[in-house]
Image (cartoon, rainbow, N blue to C red; front, side, top):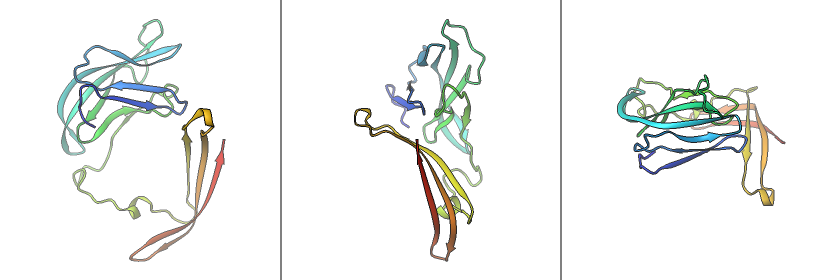
Length: 182
């Protein structure tokens, strides 16, 4: 993520609400990045400083989030007075859960293995996708392409690992896949 002064970032929730952020180091006055009939959220730039992230030094921008009711009273929520942190090398270090926002106000933070130092540890597909027969992997998938032509879908996908075959050169699985469209 570059630190351009006029960079605008747009995030979408599962309910297709959009959150628009202007991560500018010149923006010292709060601006609204989300509002509805009950509440609104503001953000403003705090500082840029060197910080340690996963054992590495990174240039980190900090922003303050505030949460208000529609009349302007501060709401006591997990995101009120919350600090967003964005590293030049690491990207989003401290943010909040976007998918179910504003129903779920949950701060999230980048975590990882500090030893060996970040970026110096080779992670293989076999380490990440180390499944065993009987394992089930489920996820929700949603696409919004063009409402006029009906190219939208919401679906649940489940993979069921039936068999694992491992040789020194290859790791392969036999998988059953089920898809459920809403």
